[in-house]
Image 1 (cartoon, rainbow, N blue to C red):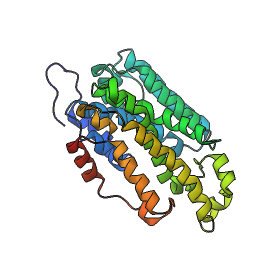
Image 2 (cartoon, helix red, strand yellow):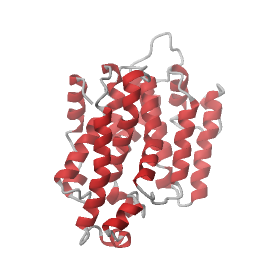
Image 3 (cartoon, rainbow, N blue to C red):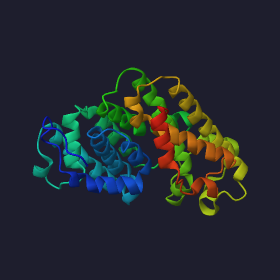
Image 4 (cartoon, rainbow, N blue to C red):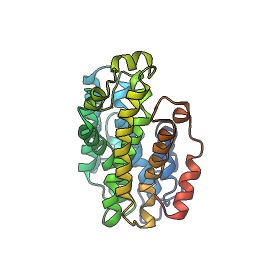
Length: 298
């Protein structure tokens, strides 16, 4: 990590970002890769935001009881109290590696607390683990958990108004929906169903059987549900790409390029999220992002 200029004396030491980089590289590689394509300074701000998002996003996966999850999210609310009150994270009890970089980013880029609180509220609602009733409910979940992250990244880049801001909501929706479809096999192993209940029932998809046996015998019903959600994600991508955004905004919007790639892979696999071609690690993602960055596309 490069040092900031003398105008930003509070910039954390480079090693402060090491735990965030390691966590993002392992558990949120797409955002990690896009952040690396941002300019120095903005890059570190995006990493701090993405590190915070990862921490609260994985609370649901790492707790055995809803109450414990609520307590962990409350800890982050308390941490934000200190950050926005100007209390150095090192002086707060129970410090966390993300807290210092996040405090710096919040001050350096004037990030509004409301967006962080909105993310925590969305993840708290996740703790109940309920299945979305319909596509509208799934869209609402996707927007609440993804749109504030894109908004914060654009603010770090100084691009939170105009065409980039207009595109951001649809980029976030497409990214979140594509991610939910990719994660169907992994969520089922954890007992979670993120596919809309009404679409599953209309397609005749037996969710208990899907949890126990995978898609065997239900491939067609599963494909109907997945293709419907994928079509909504594609419409969101189309809407986002109608906006001509400045190149400076691209690092925050590049996840759209990966979402488009994932949706194409799903389509080629007959909308089977269990297909090997879909579940296989996509080693070309860094090159896809670099090419898009150089061409000014998202």
